[in-house]
Length: 118
Length: 118
DNA sequence: CCGTATCCCGGCGGATACTG
DNA sequence: CAGTATCCGCCGGGATACGG
Image 1 (cartoon, each protein chain N blue to C red):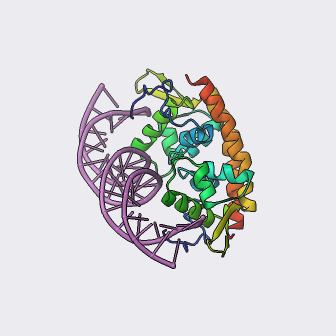
Image 2: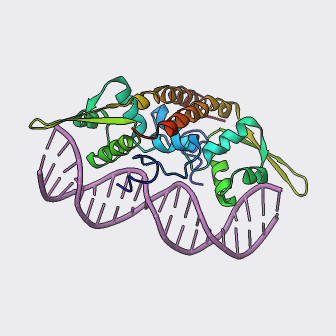
Image 3: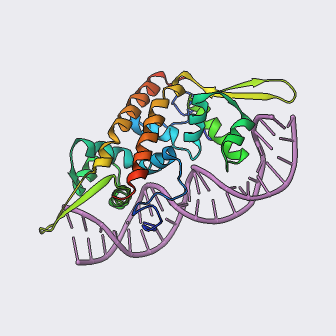
């Protein structure tokens, strides 16, 4: 999971990403991050719940992507120490503010797919 | 540059990107695409002009990213066959509609950088 | 001026097996 | 249930040199 102490708070984004656009892109462009944020923007969810809702993702990748989103202050993780334990994932306040972006990307993507030819 | 005839028009995005969000993310998340779109949304520009405006990019990468954006119907390329030749890059109509997204990503990125700690 | 052609490397992400 | 641990292949992207 790389170095969590890199001069940019506890977050994974490197210092050299000085451009806010690049920064945002970097944070949301993991392979499964879009759909994870999308799901969590509707409701918080547990690990296996996310796994069920995201067809094709492996446990490993789900963990990795969630850890990165967590390090980037987009997702928060709440552990309930029961047996078996429950882990609840949800968006942070900052993460929720990503929704308009995801939303406009959906709109653009739909239009793109409709046109489909240049 | 890969297969341009992949069942999705002449565009580079694969068929399996059925999700419009993933699609959009895929189209704009090349390393230099954000800044290229950003620049071209203000004014069209020639190849070397872009190269000057984007510190650190190589000719090879500039070409590659422009070609992909072109294949994805975001950028258009106009060749003037003078000697030496001039090539003018600009956004397509579809490409211009990306601007609000880039713009909101900049806003979010700025806020992210301001907070910086979770 | 506007590109290709090569070569090469790191790291993202897949498959699979194991654990508190 | 919610994760780690390994191993490994692919490809995005850098450096450099050459071409119309």
